[in-house]
Image 1 (cartoon, helix red, strand yellow):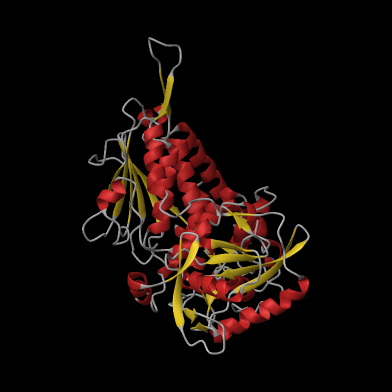
Image 2: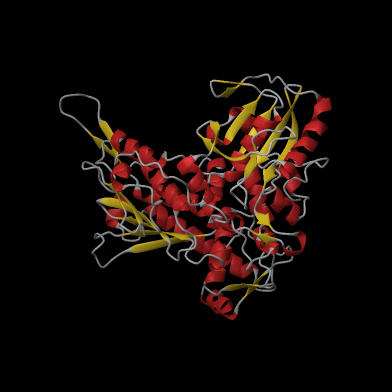
Length: 525
């Protein structure tokens, strides 16, 4: 379904009305409440969201709900049910006749507290800049560009208008279609997992919608029906192996027991959908490289407890790297861990408008974000907030732990971004890392479990090819577990398993077949 085809057809938003009214996933700059239907005012706000001046992903207008001090007034005032169809038709007409280029948001009626409200979802448009009429009278021939500034819709003038015009045909990389892919490259299971996690009303019908319909409603596909392609953001979040399309889409966690200049290091690479690898990398770091040190004082009974590295700072640094890195750049995110520091490296550097001295002071405000759609999904997953809060949070977390301040750096050409977190001067590294080069005892047990799962998978596929669900059942799992999910792509990457339908990795008929190398490995074990 194309944007604007929602009139007379049931359409589900990718975000719930409860989140819009009560949650924190959509910040105020992307949300506006309107007590009643004011076509000119709402048209200008739709235009502002479509222009998406800061690459935040557009926004939402809730008609029928008043606001006070930036918060919705509940129960809602509501709008008459007899107005719903009329308003939707008028929005369609305004998109045709009062906006250039033509633009049509998605309009969804909802019932809140027994009252009818209308949700207008206006994603950032692919043909910006957009302009609208300044009045709706028959004789009005004046047009203007509108953008969002904080919680307000304002007409773009002067430098803002010049900058907006410079965005013509400039679509961020994550929001572009990928013509090397097809709808078969989008995983319905990953999409449903995401929708269920964010409590989207689209989760239930997603199981029965065809992929084209589902992709259009989530704004992760684009193009005419006869040539529909996934967008890059869809492949990054909802393909099990996005590195096939974007080489080096991975997070490398490297432990240097002798420091960065030493001869020894241990590396663990995380590949897969962005949300998954971010969580897995952070969990791995937390379990293996974060320790608490208890410092006793001779003059008082209370001891001081400090972390070698505050996890909140690491979490922000890694999430921000995932958010802001360039996925058209063939360089992974690197997390380099030594006894005296953790360094997070990503490529390229921040927006050209960011000055290093402002960044180090926690005052940097980029003029726009590189990956507006990636940021939108991460925000809905509560993995980042956006709006330049990451750097101040890192500064605060380090200060609260009593650690030295973080160090931020990038070069004159903005080709990289580095976040360095120094170790707390009184903290010690986990004993397991000091005694065992391979990591903590917990990490070694984890590795043993992973090896047992892999051997079990190879054994299950010994006689005949098997689907992933059947493999899980053969291992005694009621459903596809995390260990099995991680092991299957790992076994394929090293040539022990292969797809039976390699050209369609997400086919519902897909199975895993043991290779000759896999048979040899199984015999050795």
